[in-house]
Length: 197
Image 1 (cartoon, rainbow, N blue to C red):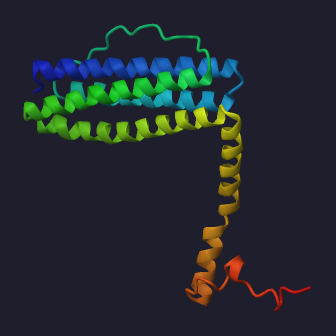
Image 2 (image 1 turned 45 degrees about the horizontal axis):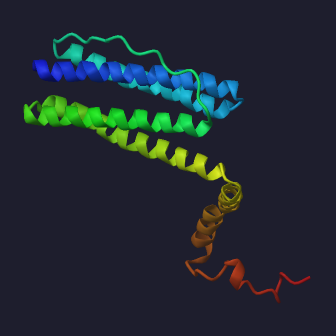
Image 3 (image 1 turned 90 degrees about the horizontal axis):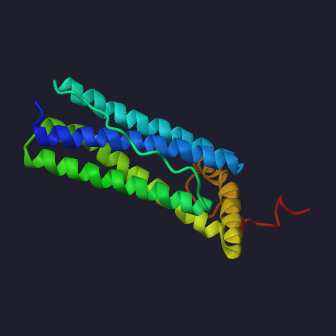
């Protein structure tokens, strides 16, 4: 049975996840208005993820015999100055969710509610991934927002595309012709043999 303190905190998290879902869905609408269709789709999917997070908490509370409650959530912002300002808001949203999850975990440990503590470990791992993902996207948005940054990002993309085939060929050669690291490296090819014209 959940303590009154843990129940209040869990229900608070239910509401926070619902609020995050609402915010991300509204962000997707703004992104569509800016013709950023792929980013809009990303945020729409993320809104669905946050709803899934909410439902996991909702179900867990009810499974313990307590009653899950969803409080009223604020109306989400509908306008952003730039893509970067939107991404900054999204990062703050994830940081807020992480802070409250950590408080929940700490409360569960203090009360020795190991069932709830174990249940929350999924959220701990999830928030680690979410914060990394959103901070990485924000960093890329800031890079691309500069002239030099756009050039660097273009170069990085070209490296990605050129490197896609390298691991596959490397393993094919390893499997059929041994492990000599110099055998098929372009810098070590013999240009006097069958490569000559």
